[in-house]
Image (tube, rainbow, N blue to C red; front, side, top):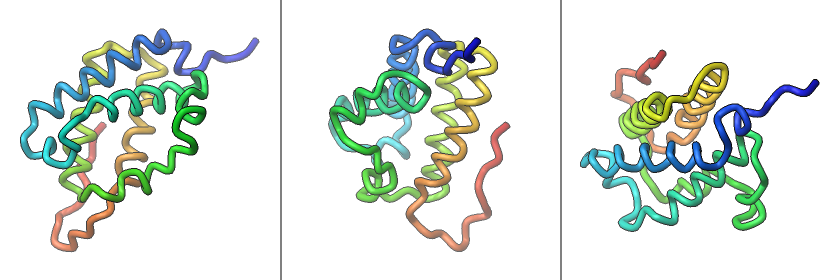
Length: 135
């Protein structure tokens, strides 16, 4: 018996679409973080949906359409410091909860978003007090 992927556990692509739409609605309402995103966010929403679906065990449509994710390279044009990371992570974790993703997928997704958001930091801020701990 094989274990279900997160993609399967949460209901597939429609759930990832709801997650990304909820997340981006939070980004749109956050003037501090919105400035980090490109003016037109529709392409980003599609890319994020496909990437997350693939990462969590869905079809490899992202790789077929866009190639290797190269997340740090794709995010390099945007200044991402600890503050931006913390805001991004807060919005994403709130979206996970708002969409109603159940355990054990919820924990696996939250852990991934904590790791990935920290990995995206590309702006040094030596005087910043540290990363926000989110449980």
